[in-house]
Figure 1 (cartoon, rainbow over the protein chains, first blue to last red):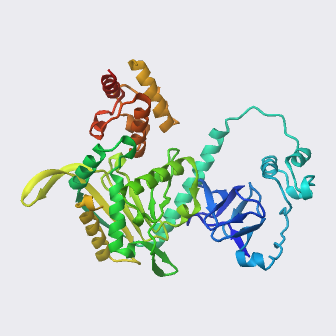
Figure 2 (cartoon, rainbow over the protein chains, first blue to last red; figure 1 turned 120 degrees about the horizontal axis):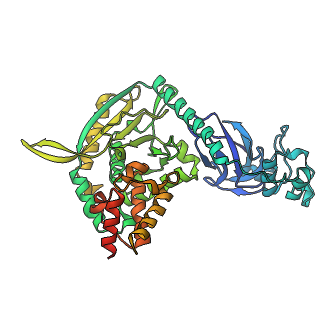
Figure 3 (cartoon, one colour; figure 1 turned 60 degrees about the vertical axis):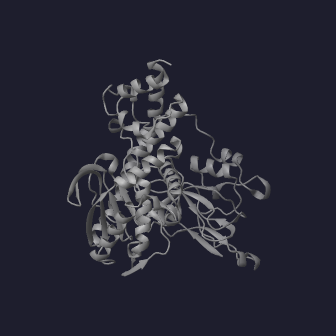
Length: 374
Length: 81
């Protein structure tokens, strides 16, 4: 028997609103199944379950806002199920009988307390008709352009969420910053000839080899991939690269490309495209919101040359990329013009020293000089 | 397909990428990506959709020549001729 609690989907999250359950009482679930959708200040996130089992009861109704850590469901684990699971702990204000999904939605929409409704369906289940009985639909009001009213509130909530994470970062993390200029002509030439042979849909954007090079360089300097937690530096074995995505309505998200070190360029491009689409239109998963072990921010689209990033706690490093710009470049006593990228590293000085940070940027540069090996 | 038809297609795609914008208000020589804040992913999506709608596959080397409405109309008209 296990309680499924409102997860923290980022260090800035205090509470979440349950939008819908994707499961019902009695459903069998497997680890990583999406069982609920939760709205945070930033977005609607699909919540995954962490163990196999059977949904014994759902403790929270759609529309309810609960604090991080609040029990939302009771899941009977495999062993517990066999031993005849204990009845769920009862709490006031929570309905435990059967409720059809549509009835739940209706009840939430009309503000009906399910405890006050007598079910007339099979085994006393509450069905939509019971909700209709309890709270008949009001005559439709003319729409008040809800989008325009709701948007500023959500934007303000996201602003607060970003504010709290970034303030915590600057308050707690002693950042150090390193910067290096990287000659990108080899990578860009290789990419141009690669893309020339591909249909548009399969072309790779320049940021993709950059992410790949970061993953490889982190393999050499693993200290930058992980967390600072409880006064200890914890290096992560898994590499989940958070990628900062600006949202059109303002604000940003940094969902993770999970196991980025195991992905080649094509797979990274597919993963990134998918992630950006879902960040902008909904459908990110909880692990993508919580599991990033390092973050990349790329502001090159805007013509910015250098990014001095703020680390997303409890991570210990953030890699920033600016725009690739043609610049004079001296090499072997010759002056030429090269496409130059400024890469920066913001790192937590509690976890690493500048020497290791410098080794990371050096490795990054090295990988970008041999693009055919990426 | 005349210039107006092409313009319609361009506007429809841009509207999908930047729903809050009104592409018909773009000045002919305005930089579209900057005006509508379109990042490199959406720029790629734009050319994918152009390929689907107009049947014109734009090589990567030509991306830089297609910054404004005037440039796009001239380019696509030529490719479709």
